[in-house]
Image 1 (cartoon, helix red, strand yellow):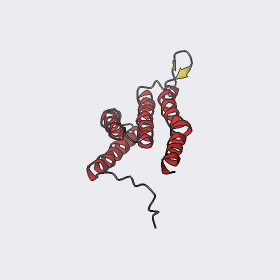
Image 2: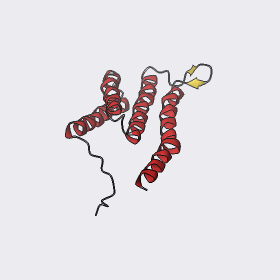
Image 3: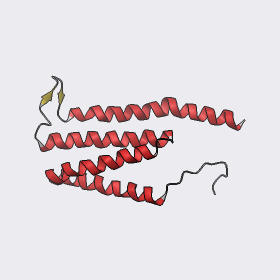
Length: 136
């Protein structure tokens, strides 16, 4: 049974359908990567990333949703970078004197991780503190 003081987060059906379609795009992109279907895999980056950005924009008023959706968008960027580097056979070549093509994907992975770290270490504790002070 749900506690009456628990807040609810509901998603309009049209947004839920978009999120579900986003998953389909992402699966097609990754399946194409796995199968070596370069053109389809690279093409699927565009709708997958655009929907992730749109979902982030749509949830910008809810800090937790924004942080997680931005992390997903950066994850897609990282994943796509890695995929492209493998497709063009640059995944083992050195860039900037230090990073392999595959390791370049760590940049967007790190950005997404930092966004989540900021949320959980700074933003979330502030939200909890604000909620406690407003309920007193």
